[in-house]
Structures are given as C-alpha cells and as structure tokens.
Length: 437
Image (cartoon, rainbow, N blue to C red; front, side, top):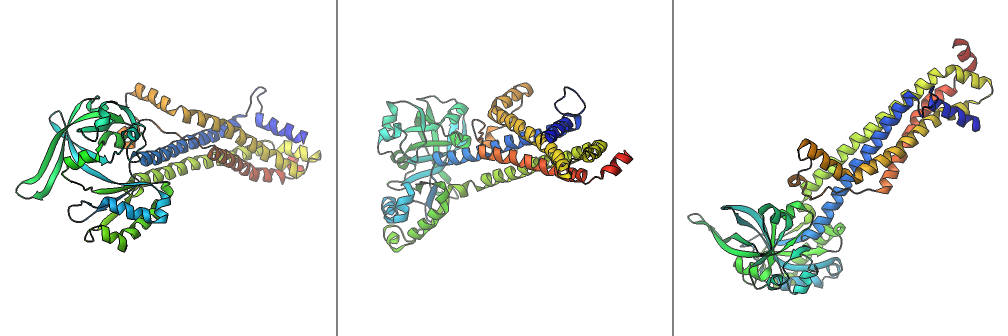
C-alpha cells in the first residue's frame, strides 16, 4: 500500500518538484472546485428564499381566508360561525386562531395622487397583547407610540409597514388620507368613496417587502365604521399550527361550512370561497421552484462536465505513463494495484476539489450580500430589486446535509471518472507496452 500511495501522489504532483498538482490535474481540480462552489451558493440562496417566503407568509397574515362570494360579500354572523368551526375536533387541534377580518383595496393620498394599497382590520381585544405581539393576525410591531397605540380601537389610528413609511416619508404621528369604495356601483354615478384622515401610531415589519410596503392595519371597529359595515366583516381568517396541513384543513373547513349546523347560523344563500396562502402565492412559489430546479440542473451539469474532464486527464496520464506502467507490472505490481493507483489519482483530486469548493461556497454564501453590495456600488446598478424579490435583505440558508451530499457526489463522480481509464491501464500488457514505448 505504501508503494501505491507513493506512486499515486507522484503522478498527481507531475514533473514539477514543488508543484502540488500537475497542470492537467490542476485544470480538473479548478473546474470541479468551481462547480461545487456554484452549486452550494445557488442552492443556499434558493433554500433561503423558500424559507424566508414560508416564514413571511406565516407571520405576515392569515394562512386561510373564508370569503362570501355572493351578495355584498358581508358576513354578519361571523362570531357564531367561528363557534361552529371550533366545535369540530380536528379543526380545534389544528387551528391557532379564527376571527372575522376586513380586508379591502383602498387608496392612499400622496402628493395629490392616490396610490393603491391594501387595508386589513383585525379585532384588538387587548392592547397589551398588541404591544407584546401576541395577536395572531397582526404583524410584529417594530416601533410605536405607546400612548397613541392604546387608543387604536377608538381613534382613527393605523399601523403601517416600515417599507411604506420609508417610501412615503411617514413618521409616528403623521396623518394619512385614505379612500375606500362605499355602497354599490352605479352606472351614472360610478363608485362612491369614503375618505377619512388617520394617524400613524406604529410600524410593523415582516421582511416580506410586498407586504411591508402595501398593507395598512387598523382595528376592526375603526374599519367597520370606515367601510360602513356595522357588525359585519368580509373575511373569516384562519391561522394554523403548521403550513404543511393547509390542504387538509381547507378540506375540513369546506365540509363544516356546508354542514346543517352551519346553515342554521349563517345565511344559507351565501356561497363561500376558501383560499390558502399557498394558493394565493402559487405563481411566485412555482416560479421559485422552477428557477431552483433549472439552475441546479445547469450547475450540476457543470460538475458532470468537470468529471468528464477528469476522464480525459486520467486517460492522458495513463498514455504518458504507459512505459512506467509496463515496468511496474514487470516488477510484480498487480493489475488491481495499477487500477487502484489511477482511480485514487482522480478520487484524491475529487476530494480536494470538493473540500475546497465546499469551503469557498460556504464563505461566498455567508458573505454574498456584502459582495453584491460592493458590486452594486462599483457598477451603480441594483442586482436584486426589492420590487421583484420582495425581501429587504438577501436570504441565505446553508444546509449542512446538502453540502455533504454535494461533496460526496463530486467525489464519487471523480472516482467513476478515473475508474475507466484506470481499468484500461490495468489491462495493458507489460511486454507490449515496454516493447512499443
């Protein structure tokens, strides 16, 4: 085994006395190393995006919404409906909360223009729960006025996202003019608007840019007065214990909605629509999965290309060492030992490239946001626009098990790449080799 190791490392080093790798081995090493690094960085980014999307969707708003899709859309006996839902044993175990909400499009006046926004109103039964961020459908408060926030259920007070505050230059105590549709549509008069002034009493932040820049939150009583929906809501919102159970819970909700007991408390003429947050964001999530699959496939093909280059490297090494192989076999070295020498040659290069590529990939993944920031300053271009990817920072999630899988796969591919040329070398006839070379 000592002579096998000695010859293997001698072939890897090449003819240079102080060189770590021969020129051909160095090229294979670089290509494999770059492929492993790219795959780790790319998958870390996409894993981070998926995790951030899941967390933001979980914390930013309801997981399931129930809406009336007939009539005016108002749900009047929502409290009694919630009681019926919670009588179901399965739903009682799987639900964190269920409550009536108002969610509607509105207009925000800014510099004599009206900007489309979304208004969401939730019940705030206890102000201390709001301050301690214990209300399920209310996003986490980052900054607020302690005195004014206690009057959110009685005054015209709103809480907005930090991104909206940044875009429109709002501070605590700033006044907002909001407009929402009122009444039914009339051909001659169009849509009537309710317009009112509201004071900004706090800022929230979910990390989901589209949410933090578009949503305005207020208490349910304030919204019912503003939208002229006395004792009614237009949504029943649900928070679940696990997003993995969304489809099962949705199916159960539909069964309860059309049960006889529910028909007794709700308007039997109303038809309801049940939507999950995954369905509402399915285009974005689907695009993210598709991009991850395509880019991962392309990068993995790059690693396969590096393995093919390893085949050419070992094959070229075998051809250049034909005379040495014949001499070694003539001295008694077995064919299996020759096979092992050249297979180890490629595997050692694969192990080195996997380890160094893994370290480089982890380093770049951790520091990618800083690196992109430097590139953006140099080029004066925005490489990751917030209005497309929604996040206020670049999410990166490093999966140790995935890195181990990638480095192991690269090592195995390197071994397979070296095996076939090594097998050819092991089958060489020493007499013919020494005679011809």
